Image (cartoon, rainbow, N blue to C red):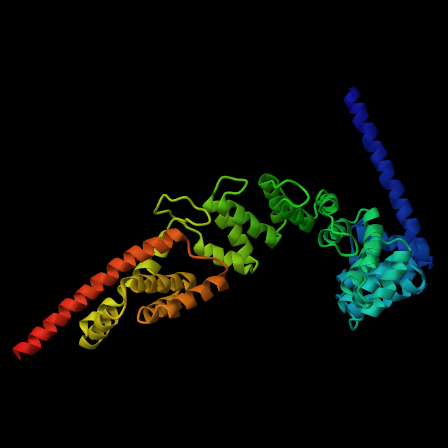
Length: 441
């Protein structure tokens, strides 16, 4: 019985509250209809937020426009927001600019900031960094944190003003004092690079962490970099992995790629090709060229139980064709007398070491190019002197910024030597047969 009384009392209060709200709404509508600007503005806000009435952007636009036409600055600003976002009306940057400017001319700080953004981006107006600076500064002087941060960005990159790291640091600090995460992060970048302040890894760590703790992905990534390389802190792959993952989970491509590298190399975690492939693929989907390249190189199935490190890496099944095809393609040439003769003459004119190094270099070229171009170049290089393939291999290795793993080169050289001498043996045998046939004739 007690619970029932409490329930009935609660229902009574709710009905009374709804009745009061209904009366207040009717009163507000009556005042708005009579031209009261404040009532029109409040009614517009209620429709915009769906407070006490169903959310209705068209009704919000109607009442806010009536209030704005009477010069109510808050209504003018909100009208600009609705035009910029296309709420209740078609999106229209020119109209947004118009209403922001009316509000900005009355000193409304947020409108001044938004005007600065639109001039900065060239949104609804020709891009004009000088005008962006003007409006950002007016808003920043009124304490708008986002304007202070953007003013710092303008000074940092020299947009609309001469580049000035000291001024950039000043405005970043003001924004950071109000908790803007990007400002914290950018101060960290300036300490890391020694821009406008003495280079200081410890200070960079401090500011990166402040931003990272607020969930800012770029700062989380930078914190990971600091731990990875031991800048300002002892090197710690586990901590690097932690911060890279937080940034990667927010879609930051650099962090996704670096996570792939750490799983690929087993740094801070157990080596895991599947995880490496996952993060490389996510980065590659965002257009990261290095991730696309590493995906091609990542072994999918190990054929040799050799440790994967800087010098040794197991083969994968996907790499077998690149091993076999360039070595087997020359065999059809041995069925033609002219090509057999050229091969024998070439082999006779080279020393054993030159033959091995030439083939090894040619195969390294094939490995570096990893495609049909590589196969063609390999075939060509097998009939050239020592310095041609070696120079080309060096150039390609420098271009790709890595060497073919020694495990691959050794396997290639052994197998290629076998194929080569089998080829030469066949050619010599067939050549002798040709000679005998000619003698009998």
